[in-house]
Image 1 (cartoon, rainbow, N blue to C red):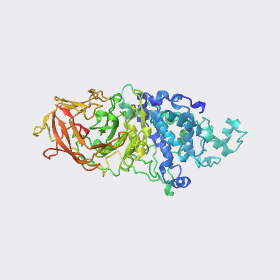
Image 2 (cartoon, rainbow, N blue to C red; image 1 turned 180 degrees about the vertical axis):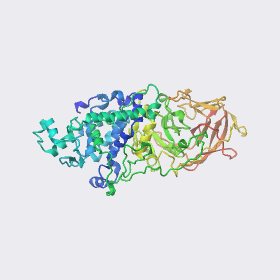
Image 3 (cartoon, rainbow, N blue to C red; image 1 turned 60 degrees about the vertical axis):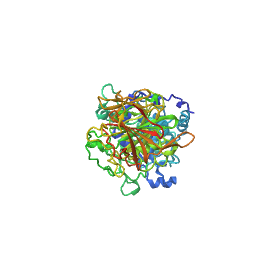
Length: 622
């Protein structure tokens, strides 16, 4: 291994407050350039040269995920330090960016070896930055690229005459006289392939350092003025105010390499690119399928929710919030992982057992767009996907299991995952936008921000408004007033609810607060709180669904029959309980609940907890 790579890796345990800014305040101008390479070469050229029609194996825009991941992991107080850059992000990574910009081949074996060695030391533990970098370094797009075509003023067709003068360059670097001489084309090649990365100036007219400083000043001003930054309040860290770590990107910006649109006369290169004037929140760009077809800016394929009351809680809502797809966030019940960030925003919270005698949670969060930290995040299981689908959410998770294959990666599913989406394979959509904190050990310290979710949705082409054909406006049947179960002859007192037989590890329980009319949730014998607010989470409605289940393999993975019409359960509200039955006929169909007379129960306005119980395990209550 090269000596210059023997540096300490520290960014998996970075200080959280500094990282907020890198993921939340990625300016639109920078993100626009992050997808700049999507039109570098034509689809037909890549298909022909690599003999593959699968754009996911060579799409050059995918390679720029390295930059997205690096920005997510670089706090302002460590910018430029060896601990974070490893000289890799400052030098070798800069060369990788230039390769993307200019198309020439390079020797990256040292970087690849270091990346492999680092991941081996992680013993399979996910690491977003290095996993993405590893994939990029093995991308066929990097292998066997032809040498660049260079003239006296152009490099692969890009005009450098505004920033390069061969006479000036040779005079500034006389050591090149012996190897290159006054060959203008080869001098330009040296400048693009070597000089820019080393900070060499190309002519007397263009000062790249001053230009970069002015660009960074504009980025900083934009970040300081942004609503997400102002919302952080007193004590917030300073934003990065950095356009790029690669000087080649400043040259590309100045020369207009990233905002040009290919000629419409060439069908396979026709593309709509993001420009600096575009509103990033209105764009949906698909990097996963055939990248020659842009997704239009107009919100197509969506439905409109006109109700002034939330379908989740029956509380008043706004049109914008009512039409925003919720997040379905996988959160742990592990004692070491408590408290979770953003869990109090869950209007519906599921808890289900998994292998190892431990449960997991899935938080359905409709109001998520201002959250700077969501999680921590854990892996998903197949039965959670079925529960999630009825809400048409964007699923946020950190991997999964093999049983999810074919479901999590199906066209109808929109998921953002910190590692391979079904554990042993699949994509890692949006992995570059996850980050780790230093306040807890892995695997309990993986998070994402609302800004990261939004950028991942743009990157993956996910709609953030409710989708026509998937969204169902009919979910819970809410009471017009207060339902205290007084008209149900079977109602019994249920002030305390003990779920320790259903969830023996988390020992989830509820205590009814009569003055507030809600159940407060406990976990591991104490209040379950939100790390953001410090407050204990509470629910107006508690539902237990007895569910058929089985053990799928020797590892203990479980399966649950989430779609059923024959099972029963319990409904708790206002300090009372009744026996119920439940029905769910399809993944996108809502679950309906009925009392013993066959009448659909009326839930009280407020949040709902749904515990999926293995049939045979029952709640205890008094």
